[in-house]
Amino acid sequence: MTENARTAPGAVRTVACVGAGVIGGGWVAHFLGRGYRVVAWDPAPDAGSRLRGLVASAWPALESLGLAEGASTANLRVADTLADAVSEADFVQESAPERLDLKIGLLAEIDAATPEGVVIASSTSGYSMSEMQVGARTPGRLVVGHPFNPPYLVPLVEVVGGARSERWAVDWASDFYRAAGKSVITMEQELPGFIGNRIQEAAWREALHMVAEEEATVEQIDLAMTSGPGLRWAFFGPCLTFHLAGGEGGMAHMLDHFGPSLKSPWTRLEAPELTAELRDRMVAGTDEVVAGRSTAELIAQRDRRLIAVARALEEVEREEAAERAGGQA
Ligand SMILES: NC(=O)c1ccc[n+]([C@@H]2O[C@H](COP(=O)([O-])OP(=O)(O)OC[C@H]3O[C@@H](n4cnc5c(N)ncnc54)[C@H](O)[C@@H]3O)[C@@H](O)[C@H]2O)c1
Image 1: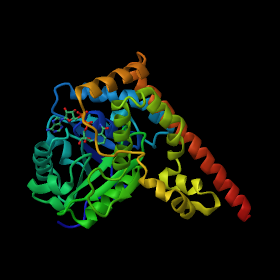
Image 2 (image 1 turned 135 degrees about the vertical axis):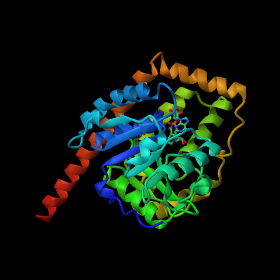
Image 3 (image 1 turned 180 degrees about the vertical axis):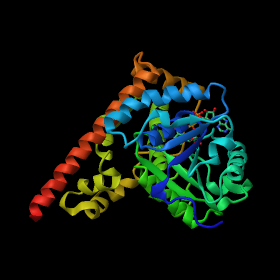
């Protein structure tokens, strides 16, 4: 396999999205909003209408954030076959169900049908590309491009290759996602859960333990995060946040001061047993927090809030840039 001779990352026109559920549909909305032509394929009989519904519900959010020139829902084509979907693609994003046998077979099929040199990325959250690329004829162009939900509003994509992926494909995918408006982490090694989900999983396990032990309710856990650490994590992350917890002494003082308490039993981290009782308690507690809102209502509320946070951060960053420019003048 040679380097992608067809298209430079910044010159991509057509993206194929294979699998168009929650994440695939979110990718379709993102790429359409960025002005790409998108060809989607999904074997479900109602996939086309479901996908158009998902794009229609995401579109107001994308419009309010600002569409790329030429962006239109009319640039979506739903193909009847996988081979048709990928035949004219400059890039392929696979977002099929999270089953290893399915991913291995599907990625081999996509690889066989996609023009030579075109990069193929999988949205998988749980499998490594090393496990998934074993059936492909040209595995060098297969990489993971792991998004966060919804891909049209949460910018992060974690890019990583497998044992048989080639460097150029990892770099090409990273450059393409950047050109498509994403915030990209190119990982140098495969890591179960990648980065974002490993951090999220630690908090999730502790939340489940606290509910299982009746130490906290679902409502208290969500409020603790949204009114507390979650607010800071939208812009500084856990490390810079703790740097400030060390005052003028910064991270060094913070570690010297609070280091010994790392050993105190604040967290359990081992996953709790997901008993029927814990499952039911989580579901009942979540129902209370949801308080009758439909999933569509919740998605609309989430999207408005994500946009509000993104806008507020953009404004602060613009002000800071203007202040810096003023200071240099
Ligand atoms: N849901 C999330 O928050 C999230 C986040 C990041 C990554 N992911 C990953 O994205 C992928 C898709 O997850 P999802 O949540 O969108 O699932 P989903 O069930 O919502 O969608 C899967 C879609 O794939 C279709 N499909 C079934 N068989 C297929 C096949 N053989 N080929 C192509 N499509 C097929 C289904 O009809 C469905 O529309 C998974 O690998 C998952 O790990 C999910």
